[in-house]
Image 1 (cartoon, rainbow, N blue to C red):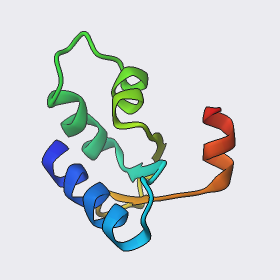
Image 2 (image 1 turned 45 degrees about the horizontal axis):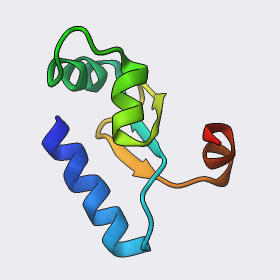
Image 3 (image 1 turned 90 degrees about the vertical axis):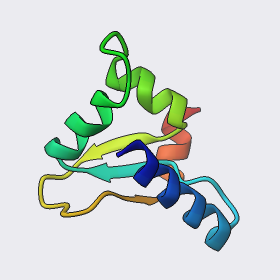
Length: 76
């Protein structure tokens, strides 16, 4: 899952010239993402490392990323 998210981020950066700040995933994706890290890491710590906020959207079939000014202001 982490490699897939990395590819999404890289593709987004190449297309838009900026790092995405939102990651949309469902609960299953979240569990796979957490499994890629040591169990001591919280989702807050993981998202901080990825430099993104997470949106849990159970209708999301595939993870996707985007950039929004609202998330950028909240993180500041």
